[in-house]
Structure formats: structure tokens, C-alpha cells
Image (cartoon, rainbow, N blue to C red):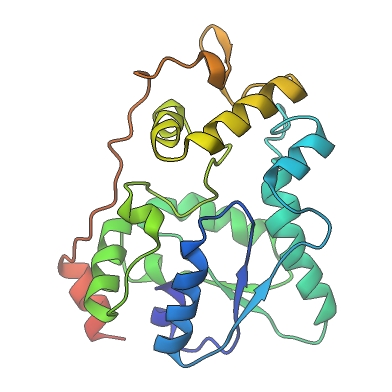
Length: 231
């Protein structure tokens, strides 16, 4: 939606990660048809999946810097490699941060001075619920399946940044992923989760802990209509 609202995007890129739900590719193909523009798919040739990154790094993230190898090696590094192959481009990135994510947008500008940046959702005063409502009013195909299943983001299935409620939902919806991540925790000797008492390993996580009442329901309020009518 951010790229659609920007209206002047001349290059669409999708960075594919094996751990994302397969329905994500269906969504990309539907976007291509609706936009009439080819979406270039990039993918790491160095690492196959999240588990590869975790095994090499020896953990899920750096405790001091917050560095997550999967995010950095499977996504950020791929974008930087694409930039390096196109040194003559005058880059302007369009980001999908919403009105709740202004600090993230500011950090993105500071961390990437090599390019200009646009934030259409913030500029149009849109929250995530507005964006989902606007999507349903604009297009005739479905959102990525992870949203339909009640997840707040279309991240990797088994995202290491998820909380206890998220992981207990993954336990029910994708038990094989839950079990795989639980084995990976024991292999590297670090847990994804923690509480005030310390590490909480997935194979010890109480199935009743956490809260997943975070489903994004489409809602098209005043700002949603304004954004659509001013596209």
C-alpha cells in the first residue's frame, strides 16, 4: 500500500526468505497483476533460511546491540548488495511504516543517508488498521494468509522477535515450526524468550502464557478515505 500510495515507484523489489509463508509469493503475483509492473524477487545465495543464520551466528541476536543475524543477513544484506550493483541510481526508498512507527522511520533515515526516503502511510496519517481497510477497498485479492490467520505482521513463520503469545499461537498453527525452533534453541544454547526470571525455552513455555489479541482487522476511517480520494 505504501508503494501504491506513493504513486511514482519505478522499481518494485521483494526480498524472499524461505521461512515466510508460501502464500506470500501468491500475494506478490497478485500485486504484479494489479499494478501491471514486474516485481523483482531477490534472495540470499549465502544462507538458505533463518536456521542457517542462527547456527552460524551461534544465537538469535546480540544481547547488547540487538543485532539479529536472520534480519541482517537474509534481508538487509541483500538490499545493500542490490545497492552496490546500482551505484549510479538516485535512490529513494518507499517504506511502509505507519503513524505508530515514526521513531522507526527516523532511525531508518539516520541509518541510511545514502538514499532518500518516503513514508506515505505516515504522511497520510494512516495507522495499520486504516491501511488494511484501504487495501480491501482498493484491491480485489486477499491479504497475505498470515493476516487472515490472526498474526499482526506477515513476517517469517516462527519469527524470533515474537513474544510468548505469538509462540503459543505458532505452537497451534504451525507445530512443526514450533518444534524446530525449540530444538534450535537447545542446539545453540540460547532461548528466544525471557521473563523477569531469565530465559524461557520454547520446550518449557506454558501454553497459556502470552497474549495474541493483536489481529489487524480492516478498518477504513476518515484518513483511509482521504488517502484513497487523494491518490
